[in-house]
Length: 259
Image (cartoon, rainbow, N blue to C red):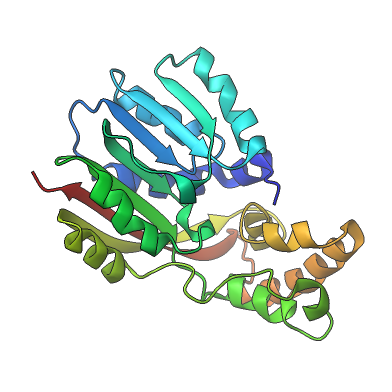
C-alpha cells in the first residue's frame, strides 16, 4: 500500500497533537538512542532529536514514500536518521533508552504479541510509549466497512479492511506493560476535531484509514466508492457554519522498565 505524505499531513495540527500528549509523559533525561517506530514523514521524529540533542534519534518506517519525505530533515538535524524497516522484524538494540510508536501499531497485525518481546529486550530504566487510534467503532469506520461489505463492493474489497481486534484497549496495554516488569500509565482521549471545508471527514480518512480501499480499487472505482461513502459521512457528520465536528478517540500507554 502506497502512502501520500502530503495527504497525510493535510490535518497536521490534529494528527500531531496526540504525539505531543504522548511524549510529554516520557521523562528520560539523557537517552543515548531514541527510536521512532513508524516515523512517517519524519516531522515528529525531528522533534525528538531537538528535545534530546545528544541522543541518536532513528526513525523506522516501511513506506519508501514516507522515508523520501523524511530524508531531507537529516541535513539540518545531525543526530537524526531514517531507515526502511519492517516493525514486525525489529528488536530493540541494547542501547535503546526511548522507543516511541505513534499511530503505527494499528497497521501491525499481532502487535500485542510483539509488545512483550520488545519490552523484555529493553534495559532497566528504558521507556516505551505508544499511541493508537481508538475509533474503529465510530461512524467513519463502520460506514466504510459496511459499504465495503455491501453487495456492490464486497467482490472487490473482501478482506481489505481490518477491524476486529486491530488495537487493544488502554487497560490491555497497561496489563502487558505491567506484566513485562514496567511501571506504566495508560489513558484515552477523545479529541473533538473541528475540520474545515467540504467533505471534511472524507479528506481526513483519505490520509490514512481509507488508504487500503483506494489501493485496492482502480481510479474510476475508487471515485465511485468515495462518492457513496461521502454521502453517508455527510449524514453522520453534518457540517455547520463553524466546520465539521469529528470526534477522534485515541489510546495511549507509556512504560518505564523497572530498575
